[in-house]
Length: 67
Image (cartoon, rainbow, N blue to C red; front, side, top):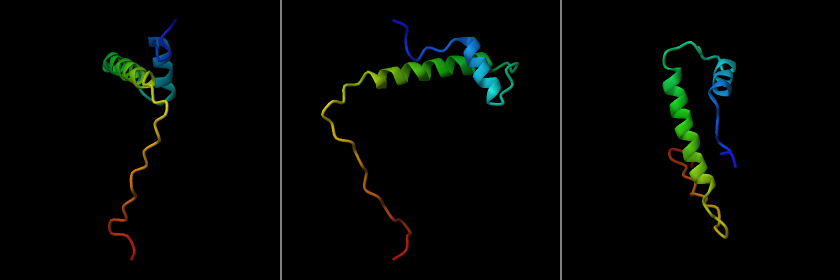
């Protein structure tokens, strides 16, 4: 089965171009490698079994808020 977070270079460049990035920039290969690693890390998070866990809601702080 294909990795659901897999992104080929052509699709990455299309997204980059649509986002207004210069796809001819010499750093595109480095950015592509970074995005691939980030997507791989998201896959690890997606694989976590959180069944039965309640969502965590941190307490809200009103620092400097009205009294």
